[in-house]
Image (cartoon, rainbow, N blue to C red):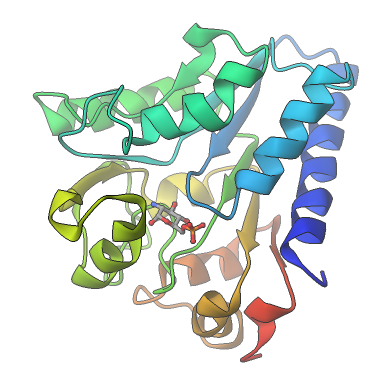
Length: 242
Ligand code: GLP
């Protein structure tokens, strides 16, 4: 797409279509979405909110699982992904609170928290559509370079680069948590469909490594080359190195 707004428009229409198709099949199983944070998905959330407000779409029967959460931040901490998701999306739509799942970065037992998260995804029948972004180092969720491509939800230590990039959301770099709970690459790959939004020149190298080089655990988003139903929607700037 020419720009990030057009990329967001394409993805929001795709999401709407998938949800409506699922409802038409009158499946008793709820549609399950995987959701990212970051600045790239914001224009998508803005559009989905408008669709709900205009009565074109409802999230009443939709279940969501977020990709990741920082370790150590309370849910109402302004830099937590809980806060981000409620402020930027959930509080504006008709989703039911019990259908929203976000890893608890304050959980006392990280391993248990991650195991239960995976079990819950299975209980809801798996993820139908995983929407994701991409880090400048090609990470998906918080699967930093070097992550196993078969990884499941777990605790990850963030790389120095990611901490620096993400410090733009914090007042200063020392506030950025150094660890996160994140779904694994394997968790994303199990979704029936994966859609990644990649916008801006800062993602150009990552996009090149992800799609034009081989699958590599050093650019974890490249795993989607093996996915049966995955697309990357990008803007012109992100294609600078293709
Ligand atoms: C963080 C998130 C990722 C996200 C990435 C890119 O690292 N854990 O899920 O894809 O940021 O964010 P942005 O869209 O702001 O570039």
